[in-house]
Length: 176
Image (cartoon, rainbow, N blue to C red):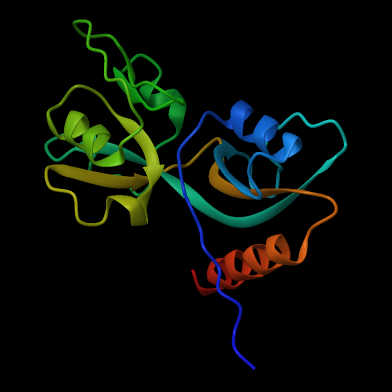
């Protein structure tokens, strides 16, 4: 008996669009990533048609330029950096405060890390995602305790093909 073939197409969308696309049946599964407190679900609206399954939670670190005076701390509470410039990557844009205007249209992590390395501000990111980036250091986030959480959105009732995709994603998440 041959193993069923699974074809997967991946594209990036805003989390609100992901919810709508799963609810309408346009896509089979959506992976939504966001920041939340540990063991807290992401705040995703649905009409009761969707199931949200947590896949991965990774603690966040403060990403700083390599020469930053706080680089040697064991952890950093966010209130310590309340007035510092930040580089943030909300869906669709990187916004900066506290420096000359700079706009980056996208959510590419390497670009975000390059902006931090260039001393344009600090950022929040999971430390493993920053492992090979030059010009930055990561310091564990103290308080508030926050994680990057990935949730899988599906319809509550799945076809056989959708079930295969869900099982493959869950198996992959267990490896990380």
